Amino acid sequence: MRFGTEEIAVVGDRGMIKALGQAAGGEANFRYVTALTDPQVRKLLQTGVLQLDLFDDQPAEVQVGNQRYVLRRNPQTQARERARRADQWARVRAWLRARNAAVAKEPRCDPASSLRGAQTRLQKYRLSGWVSVLLEGRKVVWTEAAAARDKEAQLDGCYVVVSDLPVAAADTQAVHDRYLDLTRVERDFRTLKTGLLEIRPVFLRKADRTRGHALVSLLALKLARALEQRVAPLGLTVDNAVERLKGVRLVCLGEAALGLWRLADGYPPAQTEVLGVLPQLTAPVLSLGKANLRRLTTLRQSRSSQ
Image 1 (tube, rainbow, N blue to C red):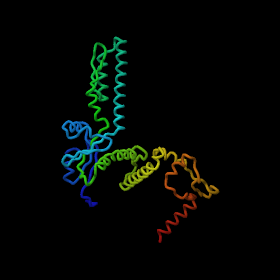
Image 2: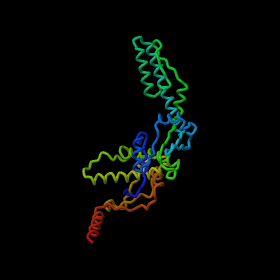
Image 3: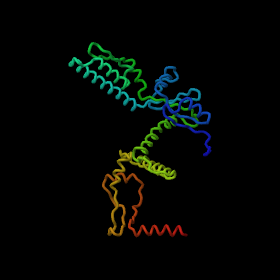
Image 4: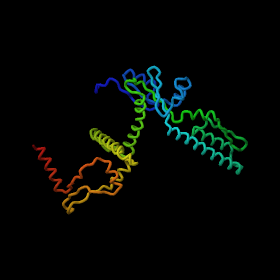
């Protein structure tokens, strides 16, 4: 290859690198790192390839042939998914109670419509696997299957990363971390496209200018990453930091007609906190007057003429 690389590992999200892609990539010496879907994980649990007790807050690995399965349970995600499910079911129950009360109060209300509405909500929130509803007279009643609910909750916060990378190339933690890096890539794309930088729309027609526009946007993304690493310990986002840095102003030296400006010696606490984590540079003296601009132009011309 162009860079002398013999093997490449491609990291893709669920559904992006399927069996055919894995086979085709293997023929071209491409390795893969991806994740299994929920049905795939449940099938491997059912066949005994994976065991539920292997899911923990630290990655664990199961190797079958040339495939490596890296299992992990994220406690924060587990708590969030269970809280979400409980909240959704509470909302459905509240709607059912209100609807049953309305049907009992108003004879013209159609009970069958209540049943259809309940079924629609159960499907929408993916609760129909353990909640069933039926119509008894003019009232919709529900039943919960505790065993089915517990089975569905078994994989809350669980995920399985699969790869064919050799152990010598990447250990269990490395395979796990490379897959999680996808979240950073997705976030960077959002930052480039619709977030802080907004690379689109592109109002350029020539190819070299479009490439230059993309290059500047990527360099700006690297600056945003570096700024994020520095301000994160302060509990600030990049947007917060940039908003604070807008208060950093130049001060005029002498008469305004001279066009001499420099950075101030001190700033309010909000700006000082951000400036304190940035590289400490000597405050430059800036001259923005027309005479100085002419000198710079003349200097460039004299250099180019030599």
